[in-house]
Image (cartoon, rainbow, N blue to C red; front, side, top):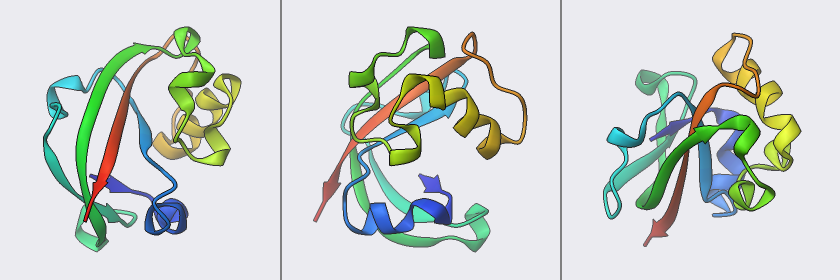
Length: 110
């Protein structure tokens, strides 16, 4: 699973345990699945920062998210009203509260 370099410090400190992806992507993330956690602008330019195990993944509209859905996310995405703005910046397109997102929660594997 690749994340932008902006989150590298949080990942290395194991403080980020959740990500929100635009669209319904639950078919990509099965409970118990192992992933290499990488940081970089593109997968080709990424470096591994750890290994993770998927704890759960679910899809919902942004407007249906609750604060508890954001626990373990990065500080820039700590409030539901920030989610469309953060995702708009990441995906470089306008994202609204009506868009579907996938919330993925993981645990770090030693």
